[in-house]
Each structure stands twice: as structure tokens, then as C-alpha cells.
Length: 174
Image 1 (spheres, rainbow, N blue to C red):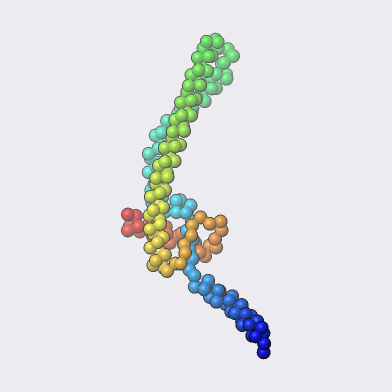
Image 2 (cartoon, rainbow, N blue to C red):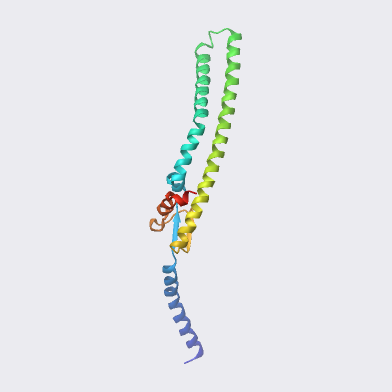
């Protein structure tokens, strides 16, 4: 047998064994997936945070709604009676409408900014707790890899329920 044939046979044997060894390595790899959006929606800390934020911002939201109704009422008043009003009265109402509209837009923008800031603060706290729970779960169940925010994942890899359960336990809420 020539040296070339021996090398060729060895290469064929090596190539034939690669898929088997690769497949067995992949079978031993334990991967999990956590759906972050579900954590923000379903985790007890997220539910509490949403209620807390709603309570904090409900008065400002109601004030904004009242201001929006004032702007709408003044605009409708101008549209209905603008043609029959005296010129000075119409200009005064238009000026009032402009000022009220700017005040509404300013307050609405501040409201959204403050709300986003508070939501981001609460989300950061939730993520911190979730990351601790995920790390504990990974160690206790011997995961090799846990991923978040993927384009697609098989449902059999989803461990979000386990993380939510871990976050529901008293020691995880700290």
C-alpha cells in the first residue's frame, strides 16, 4: 500500500468520525433561553413596579387629560364661533389656545420623559434580580449557556418560567 493511500484512508476515517464526535459534544451542551419581555410583563417584581409607577403617575396623567380637554374645548369653541366673534375676542382666544396648547405639549413631553426614566429605573432593578436568578439557575441546573434577546429559539430551550418562579420566591425578591 502506498503512503498516499494510507493517508487518504486515515483522512476518510477521521472525517467520518468528526460528525459523530461533534454531535455527541452538542448533545451534552445544555442551553437555555430567557424571554426578557415576558420577565418585564410577568415577573412579580415587574407587576409590582408597573402598579407603583401607575400610582405615581396617575395624578399627572389625569391633569394632562383635563388640560387636553381644555385645549380641545377651546379649539371647538373657536371653530364654531370664530366667524361670529369680534376680531379682538377671536385673537384673544387664539392666543389663549396657542399658550394652552404649548403648555399641554410641554407637560406631556415632561410626563413622558419622567415616566420613561422611572420605567428604566425599575427595569434595571428587575434585570439585576433576573440576572442573579438566571446565574443561580445556570449553576444549579448545570447550563452551559443561557441567552436572551434572540431572533428565534425553540420553545424547548425556554426557561423563562423557571426564572419567573425563581423571582417569585422570597429570597430572590431581595
